Image (cartoon, rainbow over all chains, first blue to last red; front, side, top):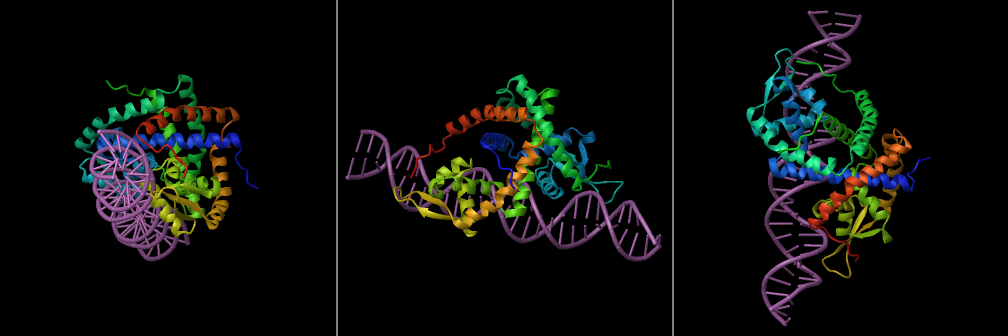
Length: 162
Length: 162
DNA sequence: CAGAACAAGTTGAGACTTCAACAGATTCCG
DNA sequence: CGGAATCTGTTGAAGTCTCAACTTGTTCTG
């Protein structure tokens, strides 16, 4: 007894798919061109830059960027090669690792941010009316809640500070 | 003179990012679990199934799935190995290749569709009010138009039938 | 305290995507 | 006609992501 999508829903879904796909492709391409990193890596730098001491536990960083521990580990290794992030071991939990944003990493982020933000603005906020922006937020938060809930029930870290 | 995002825009953008990311991750994981293919490959099967003779030129298929020719070529190779798609050469243009959905491919799609649609419904349409669904469509189409325009100006095929 | 259960992070293999380079076919124009 | 420009599709290498297996360290419990 599948609840198929009707004509209208189909159109909605496909428009949404196309829009998000083109949007993220575009933003990704811009970041890749400017700073040679994918958007996921940019996010990592952003989170670190906003954290006290520009430092986060790997697991917290993974949670806050919605990425798996494995993905994050690979990503940090790559960012370490670029000299933008460093690993330190956590003094209070010998299993733990801290990721620290270096000065070079901060500089790279500072250099990438203006273009990226401009991209977000021109592709997302500029085309929308203020009312639509409000709707976008409402919609996103409505969809987000149950997804986050599902995800948490499947066992993610709860975020203990080091 | 970067037009930074204000507090409100920041929240909107991050909610949107998180929601779409979790949503697509989730749908992808469901498809991977059920039919062992990524969402992009599912899309390819869908487009072929809707086409006359279940057949499309590679370039049209690439355009309609918003994927690069290269990506499509790799994907079709993989789907060919699974026995779900076949390549034929185009009778009227010797450069051309046709991708044809096989019976096995159609069966695979028919088997994957119910679960996938149910996923879309439960993660997207169920949480939203009818009014929000209408907004989602409006928003998506608003964002889509300029993105498509940009893309076309960068030179995509215009879609000639074989 | 010992052992089981659990948590943090890493690793390697395999799958997918991107990018640039390429080969073959067609079209355009002098 | 004939060569340049264009178009179609493929290929291989390099990068990223996923998944499962694993190591090490911590916590829980009898």
